Image (cartoon, rainbow, N blue to C red; front, side, top):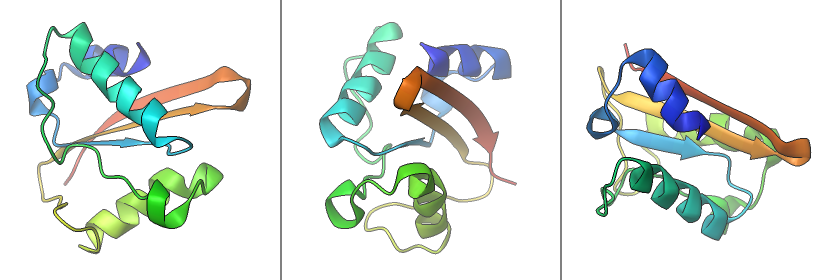
Length: 108
């Protein structure tokens, strides 16, 4: 999985991740991606607020999903979601034509 590869290249452990921001075309697909990631590490329990979701309110906003999520997080506009200095965020997307991307970012 591309997220696991990004974590390995960044020398970041799964437990260090504070948020996973995934392109939101389908909530069930995103839940499956997150569950699959944790299964790769033999983890059954997923932290409750690790993956902010806005698809129910905003719909699929195409390439704007992840930047919108980040902006809402930084502006403290998502209930029960917060990021602070030093947090480690994972960004991931799966798009048309099977474009798959992931990056790891540490908040300054």
